[in-house]
Amino acid sequence: MFTKFYNLRAEPFLLTPDERFYFESTVHSQAMAHLTYGLTRGEGFIVITGDVGAGKTTLVKRLIATIDANRISAAHVVTTLLSGHDLLRMVAAAFGLEDLPQDKSGLLLRLQSFFQETHLQGRRALLIVDEAQNLSETALEELRMLSNFQIDNAAPFQSFLVGQPQFRRLIASKNLEQLRQRVIASYHLGPLSSLECGQYLMHRLDQVGWSGDPKFEPSAIGALYRHSGGIPRRINTLGSRLMILGFLDELHAFTADDVNRVAADLANETSVESLSEAYLPAESERLSAVATAERLQNLEQRISRQELFVRRVGTVVKQFVHLANSTDS
Image (cartoon, rainbow, N blue to C red; front, side, top):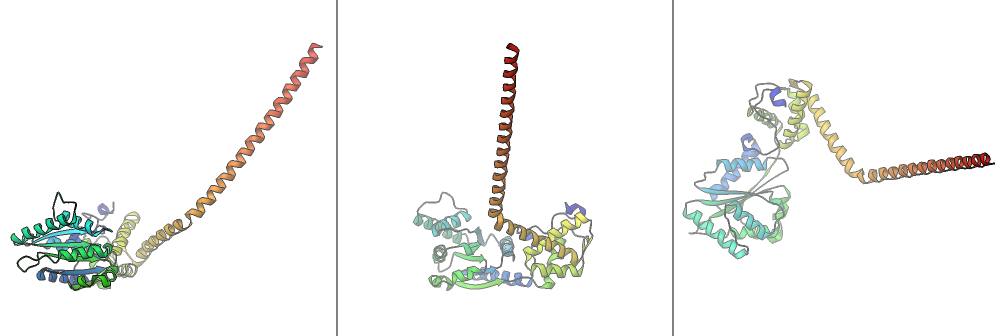
């Protein structure tokens, strides 16, 4: 829609994580440095946390795209609320293992055999767990047990755990002391700075062939930062809505007023949804009561009309009978 209007090759602010749009901000650079350090160590756990929309999955996909497959066999899993056994099956499937045994002992033997084969090929197995805050303590303990495997005094397997801030509270549990001892580095992915917000915006546009149309006034970039708080996904959401507004209103330059307008629309949408959810039951009951009253009223009116019709018919019949009797006499 607006891509043709602005002569862009693609939409610059899609919400789906895409490593091609990876932006080397200060915080993302630091997070990547921690992951790279983990690769050089080749053991233990690396923990990366960040708020929703901070760019964690994009960071992970960027890392995977740069990994040398001849040295590291990487698997990326996105977790839901799984039991420890189910997580092991997911891990095995992510590494490409098929015909998995149903029992836990058989599954562990298959994984151990895979790690050994990978080690003999001169490679190491790397598991990257996304949305790690969904893991249970039991599932995390299973990952720790996998990290116990050793071949020739080397660790053939390591894990990177990536999740939302509450994951730090999870691994602080007293039951996970042994896992915490295996964490060799951790980092929290914070928001972009105001300067990086503008740089991020231009970076996304440059990736799709932007040539200066539309123009973003400095006030617009400042407003984007204020409304997004420097969170990349929020910037993308505002940016996408802004481009749609520009297409509809045929704008070729955006100001703070335009951004404020888009942000207000988004806030109103959220507010309307909240109100709808909060008052839907009461409103439904009210409408149901009104409908019932209307049906009763209509029914009473039909009965009244039928009674009137019957009385009129009775009167006509009586008149007819009386007329017939008069004629006979």
